[in-house]
Length: 231
Image 1 (cartoon, rainbow, N blue to C red):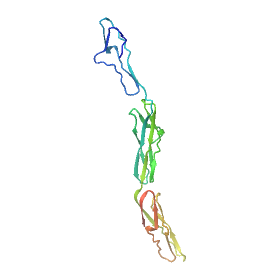
Image 2: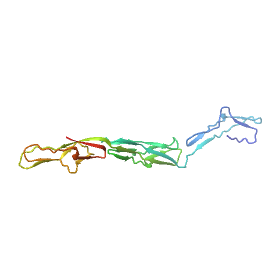
Image 3: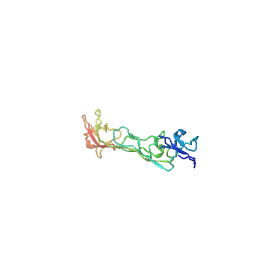
Image 4: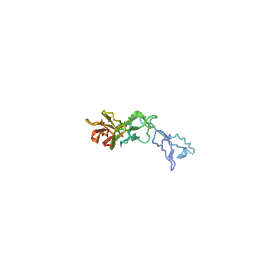
């Protein structure tokens, strides 16, 4: 503290246990809250000394220099199940201090979702987030996008069944063709090159297609291996 006693023979000191100090961390106005009771005044030449206190204070103003907040979307790897899979959320990996608050803007989300094998991005950008602080006026947001990777399932067993039919003798060749499978929608099953699913005959009797697993080709990006069983 300072005084205006000048050359006067007056001694001004803080009272025992008192201090003239203002302190703070965040932006704001911090007062010392000094009063006359905080001081002792003495002089051999003056018997009546009035003390007038003008309080001290500390003002902390915001940082105007650019500071960076770094955000990373979550990422995960999951195995294909045939159902929609997802990953959500993000981490604030870097910020100046805890006075900076980071949140998603209303109507925005940190989520990646998909069903089939592949990589699905959250599509996060800086504009998806709000970073605020009374201590910083210029906050730059940098974003590392999150993603979900779906990998193929190990093995799928597909059953193939040749079509059947019962017809009455006509004296002419009659036939039944094609087949059915229990394959899910994401699996394509077709006849191999040069194979056919056909049973034909003219006279009374039972005629078989004689199908075998090698007559078929099954493909899907969602499975590492597809086993065909003919029933």
